[in-house]
Length: 272
Image (cartoon, rainbow, N blue to C red; front, side, top):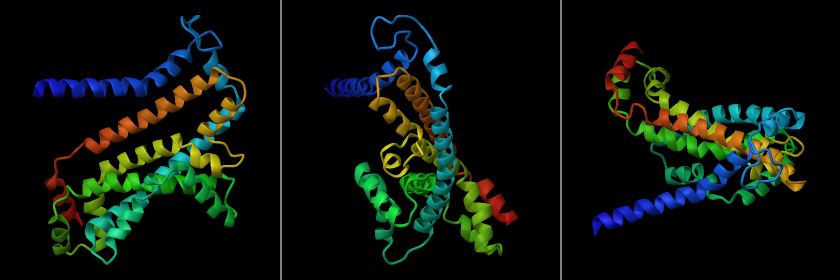
């Protein structure tokens, strides 16, 4: 009976994965289809749609904007996420539960509500309609992911490492720089890559606040509002591949070194 339930559960998960990945696989296949319209059997193999896509200056500008936003958004989300995670790890204070709830709240808010709220707030500050608005929104969106990743890593740190550094007369800043940050290095890289992927792929909030400064997902919507273009499949494949690559590499980094390497950390505290 147990084997039957286990096999049934695996089969169900496989069907769910196939259901989720089927549209993505179809987009990938049809992006190389010689026919303008998605149809089976395929009319032939071509890379013309990719060539047309990346010869369009509007699409290239959208990719550049997405990269200009994703990189600083990943960096700021990682920096602020580390600060929030270390605050939660190291300090006890009144309202700590409320602090954690607020830090992790953005992903639970519907994207449309978040986009409308951001548009209303940033309009009051005369920031809506440009890349700074998109950057601010993506930092808010990515910060909870960064905090969660880094907080998990901090939970693996030996609690005696920081007191050991303090006993060796290291100041708090030195301990943070020579002990805590090296211990969290892999999770910091993972947080940067994953939050950059979240920023690069985010659509709804960017659509509300970007104005004429279109990112790639917003540009895809513009294509969809006009005639059906096979270039949509090409753009979607590139965006998906980029996001998946960042997430996979970030996940690999977050999974490295799960076993605490106390020796290296103690050496770092000695150097401090």
